[in-house]
Image: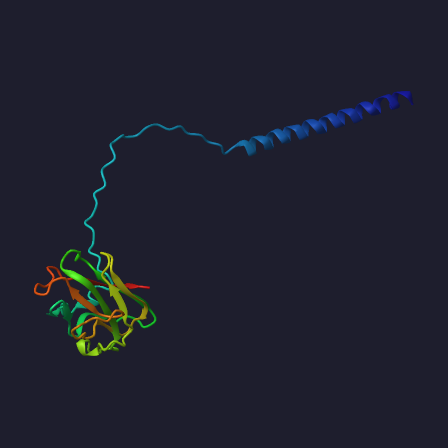
Length: 214
């Protein structure tokens, strides 16, 4: 009995050791499999050349969508009797927005572009009008009667101007002045006065018309 009892633990220990050795061998084998598939590589300079310059292409001509919508009419002319002036109804500009969508709004600006100070004017102010003559409407001096959205332009600085904002497209606008008989002395409208009884002003105002989207 004592010989049998002494042999059994040794056999169990031997079997356990064999099992662990087998597991270790399998683990090492598996580790070798999972560790495969790696690769590495180095690098080196290739050719070396200067960067070529960029050559700019010629710019394309850009045409404004509103080019040609404003066209000039007749010049500002004053007749004199002594120091008081008079002027006929005059169309200065036509702004043709017939081809533009009525859902778009536009701004018009009537601006002084020259300096008339010290040119023989005592007082100069104009009552400008902007008449909506409709799609395909005729724009001429006969439309100006003092009721077409008038705005007073006072020539007290080189930045003199009048403005009409948020006007719908799809129509034609006519900008000018109504007739003012001598003496043109309306303090709230057209007022024309020179500083000489016999000599007219040496310079008359020059105007420009601008059109832009609101």
